[in-house]
Image 1: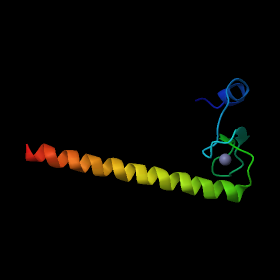
Image 2: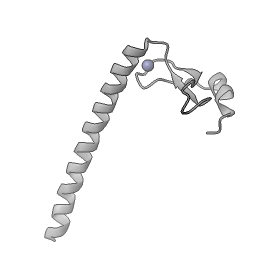
Image 3: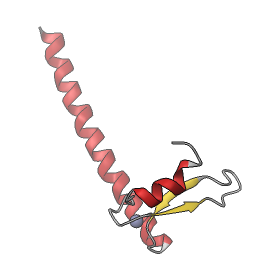
Length: 80
Ligand SMILES: [Zn+2]
């Protein structure tokens, strides 16, 4: 996605935050990454951080499960 496509996207598409709330387009004021566009809902930052952490934990558990499945698959491949 190019930098300039953000505004047109926010008008034509419904974007959602990682917490599944409706998201708005924001422009980053982070000095390390100025002007970067991102989507996020209007919830307070702390709330967002907590939900972001939960989302990451769920993602981590999913990856862990996938990895375990791969290990099992690999085990049977070796056995063959
Ligand atoms: Zn959110």
